Length: 175
Image (cartoon, rainbow, N blue to C red):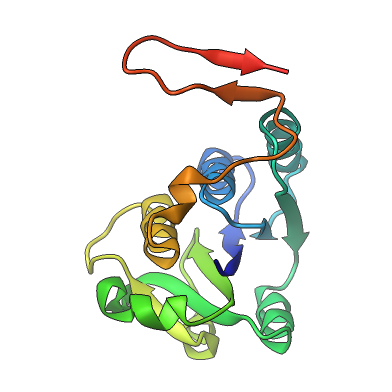
């Protein structure tokens, strides 16, 4: 399975806290190794996600970066394929094989209006429909297609809390 790093473009304090937190949670749950947040430094997001990782296990980290451009350039030098999620890109269902052919992927997920240079510097501008929708949903669907559904069975080491599947009711195990 490829290594995925998510770049959250343009986080704004207060306005984006909840959506950025959810972007982090979904990225972690679906198998990304880390998220890099470009924009305002927000220690509350980092603290919240570190707490989730400590309780629910796995390896996932949160970083902040002042320059999305430097992050993109750094990851390209490391051999990452850069896929920008946008409703203006090529259709995911037609590009899934291309994505799966790469061992390392940097997924760019926007927050505010994205500069034209992001479109130009990305290896692929990728759409999950050409309709307005949630960047979190686009990321989740893209990751599902990249991992071909295998991420849904991911095991998280060092978990202090685990949910045991049930048809009805809740079963939580704490270690």
